[in-house]
Image (tube, rainbow over all chains, first blue to last red; front, side, top):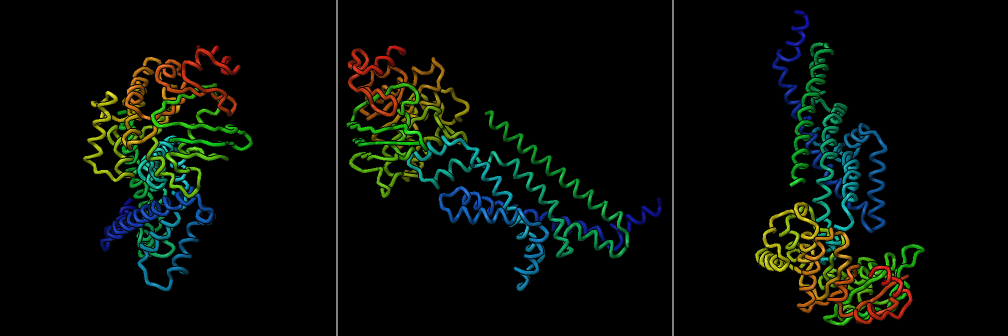
Length: 225
Length: 240
């Protein structure tokens, strides 16, 4: 028992190592947040291209979605780090954000596309019959309704991304997994650091899931106005 | 005002409109009747290009709208449309439903658009519902809002696609009354409907369609009391 307590102390207290976990969690969340934002931008763009009248735009987004979904996230991260962004010196968290954003964009594109298609065709017809352009109709009428429909799926994508960013450990030690590895390097103890970050991931994801559920319920209530 | 020549429309192998020639003049209230599947809704939807005609020519106020170079949006500004399913925007309040298009398309200021919305809501008898959302309203109320929304663009022509078919019977009257007021105010109207009472009372001309053709037309008096075509007789005998 004493041995276990001293291992916990070594993991968190000695050298102020708890700060490594705090900073690691901070980077994990930072990467996730930027990746989600970038993913949403790419996702909406790709979804609109996928639904556009232009064959070229449809093909471009089709290939993008196909390639990204057909290759491992880790390989994409390594390619961006060691090939595409290798010549310039970019902080690891930015590389991670870009890689996960590009990856997530492909999945979000399909979510957004489904959301747009779920809005009744009568809404488009009503907008167009009032003289609005297809762009205006999309922006003011279809998108607001589509976004509301896909919010649960987007929330889920956010949660998935928090976990996926653990892969960023392949290129750097900045995130939560990195914190555990730094501790291991000092103490040669695997059990406590790894179980600790598992617990931290679990709690964070639990909290965010609960918040997203609340948000969804609130929106459903607003529907019954 | 609306001149249609040789209009044909096919969906895949199915030819829905087989050649329509029709001239609708300013101020006319044309009522289109006929069995379901006769092509009457498709004809109406071709007039503002919600369906793209396969063949033929449509002139609106002298402009050929079937010409690919025509700005479809400009044409649609002149033609309001009211749908069977209302198609109000559920995420916007009644007021915003009405002011959206004038503000975005005609670049009217918010104040002007809201002033106009107030007038229109007054006209359809729903002045107190400006801040309500569509889901809070009855079908009849929603359809009256939809009419107000179309009128907010100050169209020259109003198209009605079975405006009362999705309504509970007791709400049909309130919508027809609004349409009747509009007709009395001189609006050019094309109405697809199953409401024969309305056709008789408000229509200046009745078209009977079946099988993709206009088979008979005339004043309500002529068509209802003394139909010439056998299909018209058969149809009227079933519904009157």
